[in-house]
Image (cartoon, rainbow, N blue to C red; front, side, top):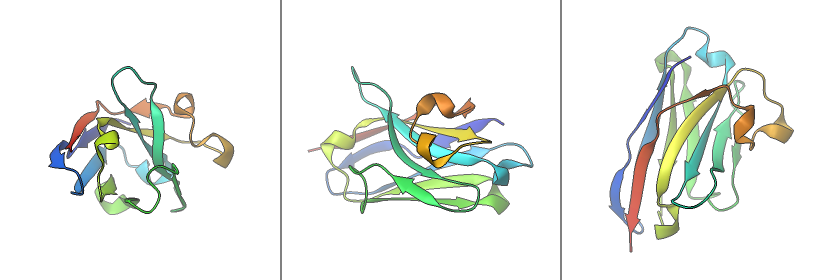
Length: 124
């Protein structure tokens, strides 16, 4: 599976962006897909994930502001980000995993494939 993330950019605080993660491969619907982010000098952190069955999971810091969704017909996962804050500034990565249990869905090392990242900058 190859992943291509896009949609990042510069936005003012309170604004919105939608990230896309496009995947190759006919079995994409079988994969769990997660979004992670990494700010300068910080570790990569979990943002949101959607399992193959559609269940969604969010970090507390983005719950109620971000929405993850998937369109299996388009082999694409989206991250709609609303009410953005300066602390959301980071490089955002999408990742995919074929076998993922709920207890590990927030762990970056459990994902098998990664996209190249897209930069989100939120100005105050």
